Each structure stands twice: as C-alpha cells, then as structure tokens.
Length: 385
Ligand code: BGC
Image (cartoon, rainbow, N blue to C red; front, side, top):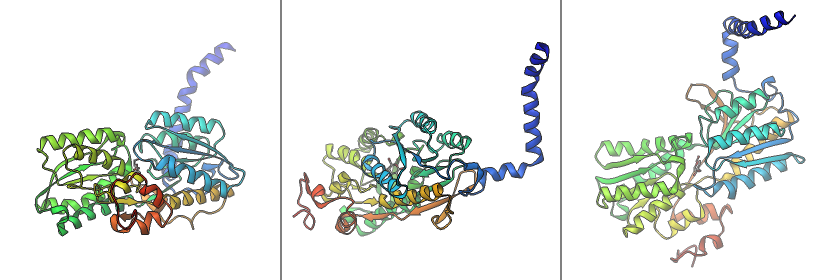
C-alpha cells in the first residue's frame, strides 16, 4: 500500500503535465478565446459576480494627486451604495506600492469580495490581481488606469490620449499666439508621469502627437523628456532644478503631466524668480492647480469629471451583481499591448484655463468659489474679487 502511494506521488506531477499538454494541443483556440473574449456577466469565468454584494475598491496612491481620497473614494462608495443598497465595500489605498496592492487584493478576496474595482499602482504588475481574482471567479474592473491582462473584465476611464493631446495642443496654441513672449525655437521640458502607469504613457503619446511636429520643424527645442517614478512630486522638483541649472535657466515651456508635478515644477521656477514667466501645464483640476492657474503660475489643467467615471463604474458593478447585460453601458474597447481588446467606458476630458474656471469646475461643484479664493494671494478678477 505504501509502495503504491509513493509511486503515485512520484508520478502524479508528470501525469498532470501530460493531461495539461493534451488539453492545450487538443483545443488551442478555446484557450486563446478564454483569454481574449469580452467577458459577459453570465460567463462562468466570473461565477461569483451574479448576486455579489461585497465589492473591493483598490486605489493606487494619495500623494501625487488629491483626487483619490477627495473624489474617487467617496464618489465610488456613494455611487455603488446607491446602486446596490445592502452592499459591503472593502476599500484600500496602495500608497504607491504594487506589492501592497497585491496584498490588499488578496485580503479583499479572502474577506469575500466578489467584484473588484482596481486602479492599479502598476499597470503590468496588477495582472497578478486579475489572475488571482479570476481563479476565484471574480471579475476585475480596471478603474482609471488600464491593467495589462486579457482576463480583465472591463476598463472605465477617460480618453487618456486625448488628455495628452489637450495639453500638447495648449502649448502649441500659446506658442503660436506668442503668450508670455513665447518664440520659435523655445526650450521645452517634459516632466511625464510614472512609466508604470499606462495613463502616463498615453498622456505623453497624446502630447507628443501635437508637439513632435513642432520639434521636427525647429519651432520647439525639446531639451528634457523624462518619466517621474511613482509620480513623485519631490522628484519632479529636483528634475526641474537640474534642467534649470544645466540650461542656465533657459526654459520657456514646462509640460508637467499633472497638477501635483506642476506645483513642484513651479516651486523650482519660483526659486529662480521664473514662476509666471514659463508656460506650465497640468491635469486633474486640483485646488492647488486651479489656484496656480488663477495666480498666473500655471497655464492650464485638464478637468476630468470624476463623478462620471465613478457613476459609470457603479453602473457596471450593479449590472454584474444583478446578472444583467452590460452592452448598453460600454461605449468602446481598449487594446492591450498584446492586441486583445477590453470592453470599456471612456469619458471626455476638458481643458481649463483662466477663462473657463467658472464654467467648468465651479459650475459642476467640483470645487467651490470659496475653496478656490481662500488663501489665494492674487485677486483673480472674475472669480475672487
Ligand atoms: C491619473 C491622473 C493622476 C495620476 C497620478 C493617473 O493615472 O489618471 O488623474 O494625476 O495618475 O496619480
């Protein structure tokens, strides 16, 4: 008996491997399809979704942008609770660590999460989370940042390449108009987001689609173009200080991918008495970003109505929970690096500069006049008299 047992133990792994190999050669297309087909709520792959009342929300960080704790978290919680009244929500913020986020996902699954909404700290590494969830029959919705995994169920975000195009177009327009004395051949610095964030790649791609033609024609001189690990604001400041030293302060335009980076870029400029004289871009319409725009230190930001992103996500979560079809909610697809497509909901970003602060962020209640005007050192004529 014991001989039989030990022989079996010895041969079991080999038998398993043989069976696996037989399955994959017998039906290779079924294996491919399992990875790339758009997932439907009825799919057995996500057996836990129907009837789900325990939702995990995982956000990536809280120090490069105020958005996560100020908007994403409360809005997602509020919208999901409104859509599924007796839902339990498990929330965690990864504080800029992909490993922490993996642990948080595991913890949420252990505590019964049956749908995960994940804004990945790292768009590649979070594939582990998608696979773990899939093994438990749980769908993952990538929120704001894409996750590079064909088993991802859905992606909800803004058109992120468009965000970059808006930033790049703003620079091109100001150059053409000669704003701040901008001239042909001016020096441009690009302080991009984190290379591990798929959005940062899209922002840069979109911006360069507008700027590279100007660089090629000699209208702009691209003197610096780097990613900022973890979107670390302090790192962006030292990068900007380095460029200013290296060029003897010869910088006329600073593309900063978001308002957090822009704010420390402005600090580096201020130290050289150059704030308000160099064109700076941003994104997120944060309170600081809007105040920097009104004081003239920053040219523009990109307003992304997070309420819409959160609502769309909640609608998907609710449809999955009720076992309903999600086709009417989805408005497009997103291609992964491997060419597979993920059903997506993509919202539209909006440019904000001094001219339309009132008609956009204030009108929507994203920020109030009081918040913006409090502590603003300059008088911004039409908004803070
Ligand atoms: C988001 C931006 C945010 C940045 C840093 C990006 O993925 O889309 O809104 O500013 O991450 O957190």
